[in-house]
Image 1 (cartoon, helix red, strand yellow):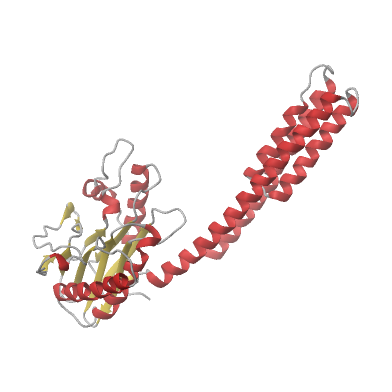
Image 2 (cartoon, rainbow, N blue to C red):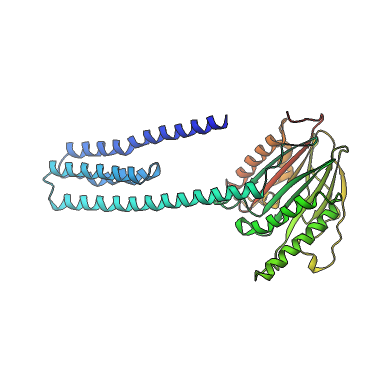
Length: 375
């Protein structure tokens, strides 16, 4: 189905491109016909520049050159029929049309080169995301999981927000975090934490002790950066570490300066009342840190929504923050966590006018009423 959709989209784009070619050609024919049929004292030939000027909006350099040549031929025909090709007025019009066409073609070449570079950057970014931010499974034990990542940088699909899931014999362990900064500059810290979590999650059952181990690993990573001459004094990462047992409807959480999850039930969306919030990872050098694990009910039929501050700090045109708890309750569709995040993503982008100023990550974890297994 996915391949068919891509092929159908590609064919549709090609058909649309062929139809759009008729627009500049039609303008050339129309302007030429009117100019030839009216008084020689009225000159519409300069309007022919519109044809090559609009062509780059749907075509490349070659077609822009072709349309420009057709416009020049049309201008020459008008000149021959209106007093001669070598009159000063017509020669000036031909030179001006050729100069403008040359500028448009040069712009089109630069635009195409930038587009190819952007495609290469996106290809590399997609590869980094697949390696670094591995897609979370749709099923993890009895749980249903969905994720969405919205990067602030146009040229990157991965940035400073991170998440990961690890399955143990009797539980699912989750990490969601937000590295200080955004875009590609924060990818190194995110990679270090994700690699450490995927290994350490198998050795620490208590989320607080797992967070302590992540802190030690992250501090070693920052020390290596310091040795290489980088300034990491302000590097830190907010994080939530969760343990979701298979056999108990609970969620065990250690918070490291991260926004609390939302518990979505038929009664609405409510932030979990975390009381033992520790400083973000990477700040233990400022003083002793005591992390504690808190346990909350996570009953069947409910959903945990994990997010980064790129969601709650997203502003609309008036500067108002996105009211996540108020908007999530009405958005709960009677479907999967994927449907919930799709609706939430659309609502969030509508709130900000289509563009986020910071990376944003969302994870929805549902404990269904009946255990759902993948086929």
